[in-house]
Length: 235
Image (cartoon, rainbow, N blue to C red; front, side, top):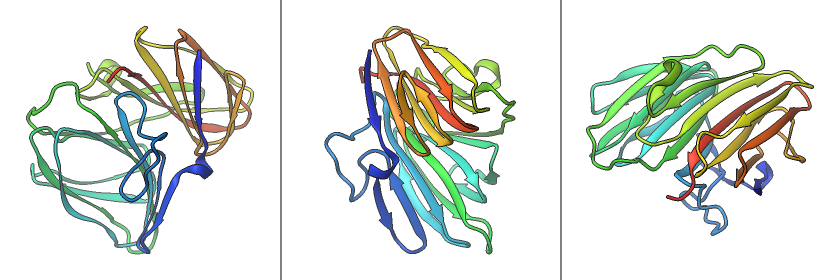
């Protein structure tokens, strides 16, 4: 087993006034050669946007982009004609493919918006751009599959052989997770709470990547909310 830990307090940070953003991996002006992503996962940003502010129209291509609102309401608009608002419980997946433009704003004029955004390298390049969103429920002490390559269990689609889960767990709960493939690794991000994973103590906004083992054990030390990604590590 190989374990790599990324502490939340060691993330890159930028304060743009209207945006406070933490970068788990190298992004924009933050560069760390030891933090260039994990497997096909390239970016995990933790963004807090002031009321009424946001990211103006900008382009993307050949990237799978997943947005996970945690607080507030995010307004989305893109060149494919999609226009909507999403909030906590909603998941948004965008396959940029051959190219598109989009904007993301804090819909509220009063409350801040906090969301996670992940960028994942695609399996097939130059596909037709796609966009989907869905509301999920998170029963206590269950991993909920939110994104997968084959829409398993009602999940959203992604152009890559990886599976993304979210789960809310009670303190003292134990989870044994078995990876999907021998060539895959497992990435766990602690959104909230405290979790002991394979004898490593992880807190809010910490992450761990685990390779070369079939199963991992998660012991929840307090009520927690986690993101778990089962993904190829050879790309």
